[in-house]
Amino acid sequence: MSSDANNPGKPKYKRVILKLSGEVLRSSETGDPIDWDTLQKICQQVKDIQALGTEVCIVIGGGNIFRGLTGSTQQGVDRTTGDYMGMLATVINGLAFMECLEKMGVYTRVQTSIPMNQVAEPFILRRAIRHLEKGRVVIFVAGTGNPYFSTDTTAALRANEVQAEIIMKATKVDGIYDKDPMKHDDAVKYDQISYMDAIRQRLNILDSTAFSLCMDNEVPILVFNLYDEDCIKRAILGESVGTLVS
Image (cartoon, rainbow, N blue to C red):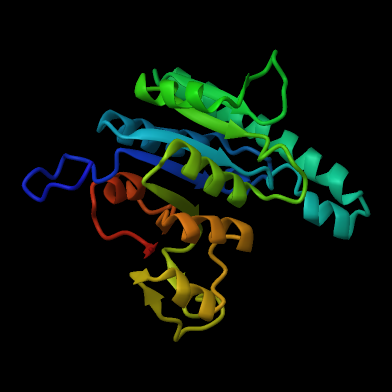
C-alpha cells in the first residue's frame, strides 16, 4: 500500500517487521528483565498501527534475560548452548508481548522456530501469512532455530519470507549517525543512506548476515528511537522518522 498525501490517515506500509532488542524491555530503575510499563507502551503503539490497517510481525531479542555471545565470552558457557539459552529467552519475551497485546484486545499468534507445542505454534510460513491477513499480530520467537544466528538475521529472514515492505528496527537513538552520537558531539545524523554507503562507512545497523539478506533482496530498514512518542505510528504514516536504509 503506497502513501497518499491527501489522506494522512492512510498507512505507507501494508506489512512490516518490528525488530526489538530484548534490552528495551529491561527496567532501568530496578534492573528487572521486563518493565511492564515499557511493554504496555510498545504494545499500545503496535495496537495503534494495526488499527490503521498495517499487518504487524514482531521479532524480539532476548538480551534482557540472556545473550548467548555474552554468556560464552564472559561466563564460559558453550556458544551453542548459550545461543539456545538466548533463543529460549526470546520465547519468554514473546509470551509477554502476547499477554499484553491480548489484554488490549489485539489478537496475536506466537510462532517458534524450536518446537514447543504447549507454548507456541511452530513457524509455518503460510500459516503466519494467513494470521496476518486475518488481522492478527504474529510474534516470531526462538530466532531461526539455529545457533550462531542473531535475531537481526531472524528479522531479515522473516521479512523476506512474509514479504514485509520494511524492517523497523527500534533502538535507543533517533537514527544512524556517521559516528557514535553518545561519544561525539559533532556526529551527523543521516535521514537516508544506501546499503553500499552504510557498508563503506562500516555502520553497524544489523549484523552482516542480516544486512546482506536485506541488501540482496532490497528490503529497506528504518532505524528509529523507540522512546519518541508515537514514533512507530508516525513512521507508518510516512512521516520522516529516524534513518531509512534502502
